[in-house]
Length: 213
Ligand code: ADP
Ligand code: ADP
Ligand code: ADP
Image 1 (cartoon, protein in one colour):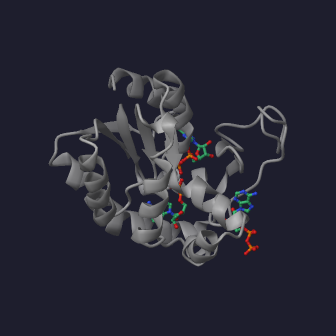
Image 2: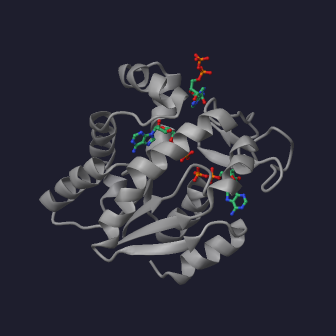
């Protein structure tokens, strides 16, 4: 299956992805994780992306389309994939359609993580991540077994530089202005499933499973 996860920052995309991935053996492509790795490694891509990311603005369409095009060529992504955080603009969605059309493929389902903006600040400011895997925790809603430490690797957790109330405002603005139209784009194709993203993680998972992707 080929799936897209769309939702504002903090809506739970990264939390649900590993579960969907394990269930369907799909490859998980998260543009935010890939960009953060590029920023940390100071690659040319990272250097170009860093400023926009720190301000909570979107990185240019060309840059992210390039990384997705490259990543989708991996053998593990041939049977299906989960796109987490891409496409975030209608231009990106159109480019993705072009890439898939060439291979005679289409998107099976778009999961819309529907949630009220008011809930997101608490989720974002309490988020801690394991940078290399992208696993996320929350001080209140999903605490790690030991404080500040990843459950799987024992490595330290970190907070994202853009996970502040201030930068969240810009990210939400970008979401409403540039990404919400992407939901309409796929709704016209009849492939959007709504998820009650404000519910606890386990209940969201149950809904994902009910949707029988
Ligand atoms: P996204 O990838 O959409 O930005 P995350 O999955 O990283 O969002 O979740 C944001 C924060 O909220 C994390 O700290 C995560 O542990 C927590 N979280 C995720 N899903 C839920 C939920 N259903 N209820 C409460 N907290 C959640
Ligand atoms: P979140 O999980 O909080 O929704 P991400 O980790 O997906 O955030 O993205 C972090 C940042 O990376 C975004 O604010 C944006 O600057 C950049 N980014 C990620 N994906 C895209 C994309 N598809 N197009 C443009 N910028 C992107
Ligand atoms: P600066 O050089 O401006 O202080 P940082 O080095 O703190 O910037 O980080 C820049 C961005 O890269 C931040 O969004 C941060 O969350 C992310 N980042 C930092 N270290 C890592 C890492 N090891 N893996 C992935 N992302 C990282």
